[in-house]
Image (cartoon, rainbow, N blue to C red):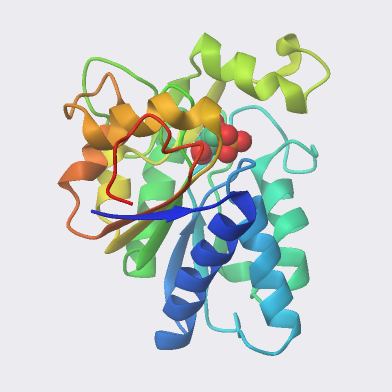
Length: 245
Ligand code: GLP
């Protein structure tokens, strides 16, 4: 695992966008696994900026997103579908037919999870998966539990996740209680993984995920087992870890 320490969120975003750009330049028809949340917003902003400068071409790129709330229509501005359009898809030359997310409105969880696994399989596999970290160490919406969930599954969101995400909704009651999420195995199948993490409120999660035991109680700790993970973290997020300067 490679850890890149940055001064702040801005530098984290530029470094992460640089790594994604390198992937797109080296393999223009690559498959990017994408994430939502405040952590990757700055990264997407940089990608859009570099696209506008003519330095990036998304014309042959395919994307698969990690997760989507269950029961939120696409049109809801808090859906991850809307998030991706608002932060990236609407501003670059990506083919909308090659951007995939779980369908939060499919009421049949088994059918939706099987469909989404097949979507990912049919892309040929994820070249680079971007991840944020939940405060409790979750990745995608793989919440702390007794075992690692393998494939795409329907998740009951942890009360602390509902609490953390209520800032985007009118109240905690409006936060969906479930989501469809890629599983740990789905995520681990990516050839490369890029984690972006910023801020003191993530310091505990960083310490537990990357310097603690590998356990389903800290879902992100599984990343220690992946052969090609890069973590781009700012000083505040690394404040509980002793790294060489
Ligand atoms: C949500 C998403 C995760 C994300 C996490 C952290 O729960 N499902 O993919 O990593 O939030 O979000 P943020 O980056 O806003 O702290």
